[in-house]
Length: 158
Image (tube, rainbow, N blue to C red; front, side, top):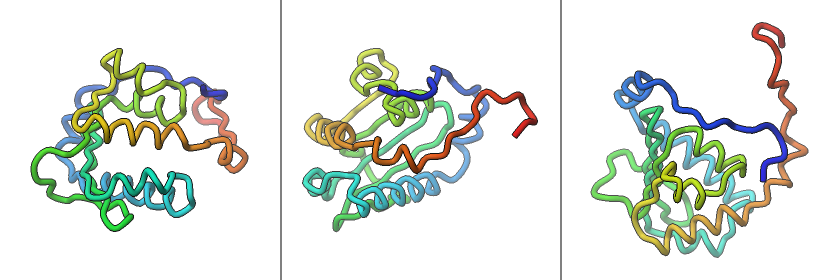
C-alpha cells in the first residue's frame, strides 16, 4: 500500500479529547467539506459516485481528538452541518491514527473495521459507495507535487 514512511498505531492522551470535545466542532466540518469540494472540482472523486451521495448526511468522529465533522451532500456540493438533527445516514468513528493510515493507504478500511479500530454505522449500501469511491482515487497523480519531508531529524534541526 504505502511506499513512504509508516504511520504507527497510536492514541492521543485522554486530556486532548476532553479539551477537543469542548471546542466548537463546525471548523472541522468546514475544513473537511472544503477539501471534499476541491477534490470533486479537480476530478479526484468519481462523478457517478458523487451523484449517489445526494441528500445523504455524514459524520466523521475522531475519538482521541474529541473532534467531529457533520456534513451533507446537496446540489453536488458537500456542505457542513452546524446543528445536525437526528442520526447521520453514515458515520465513521476511529482514532486519529486509523484515519491517517486509511488516508495514506497504509491500511484498508475493511481491516481496521474487522479489527474494531474503525466503526462504520448506518446505511450499508452507502458505506460501500463511499469505500469504492475512496478506493478509486489515484494518489499517484499527486505524489510528484508533494514535498519530501525530513521525518527523522533531531528536534531543532530543520
